[in-house]
Image (cartoon, rainbow, N blue to C red):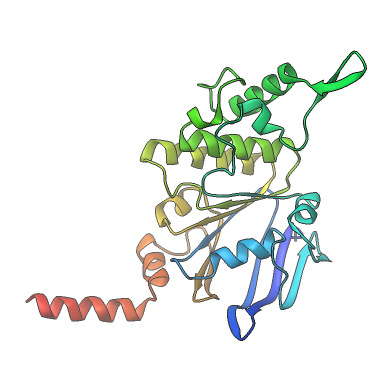
Length: 261
C-alpha cells in the first residue's frame, strides 16, 4: 500500500460556535487526482484554507507522507511542498510573464558591485516551463500577464508551482470562468501534472470536468463528506444528484413536475 502524500483524518473546523467542517477524512497519493466536489457553501473554501495553511483544524489530524503536520501559515505549507492555485491563477496583470513566474524568488546576475534581476534567464525558464505544459503560443517572457487568457494564466501559475517543486497541487475551481476550449486546455495541464507524479487536489462543482481528470472523488455537502469513490464507481447523474442533496432534489423535481401538469 502506497502511503498517501497528503491525508486528513477526522478533521473538524469551527469558527466560534459555527461548525464549518465535520469529520473530514480524505487522502491523495502521488500521481493521482482527487476531485473535491460540492456546491457553493459546501465547505470547499474552508478545506482549501486548511490544506494551504491559512487556517488550522479545530480537531483531527493532517499528515504528509504518513507524518503529522500542522502549518503555521501559507509559507509553511508551501515549504512542505503544497502549492495552491486560485481561480484566476493568482498572477499579477501588470507584471511580465518572466517576472510573475519568479516573484519572490528572482534569479539574479552580477552587474558591477550589484545583484540585479536576470530578466533573460527568468523569461527563458518561464516560457520553457509553460511550453512544457502545452502552452505553445507563448514565446516571449516580456509579455504582460494581463494579455494572457484565463487558461494561460492558470497554466502560468501551475507551471510555476511545478517548477518550484510542489508535490501537492491544490487547484481551486481552475475551469470555473473559462470557455470550453480553455477549460479543456487546463484539464490537459492537470493530467500533465499528474504524469509528473504530483498529487493534485482539484476543487470544482463541474462534474464533467472532474470526471475527465479524476482518479478519486469526494463530495462535500454542508461541511461533511457525503461520498467517497473511485473512477468508474458512479455515473455523472448519480454524482450530480449527490451534490444536489440526492433524494431531496428528486422530491423537489417531482413536486415541480406535478405543478407543471
